[in-house]
Image (cartoon, rainbow, N blue to C red; front, side):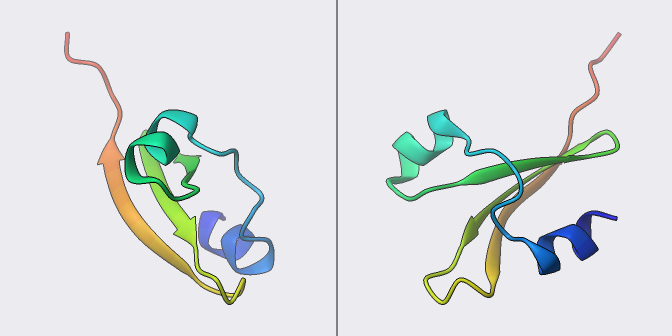
Length: 60
């Protein structure tokens, strides 16, 4: 599960280079079903701040 994997290893998911450049802070992205979670790892290395959780399906 996504929450379990984040609690075990915050840097598990790839860096979102476009968003990182836009917000000037390393931002990561994780797919969860049809959703995309974007988050940053806080300086303590033990917590994260969720920036967004959006549905990623395409309209037909």
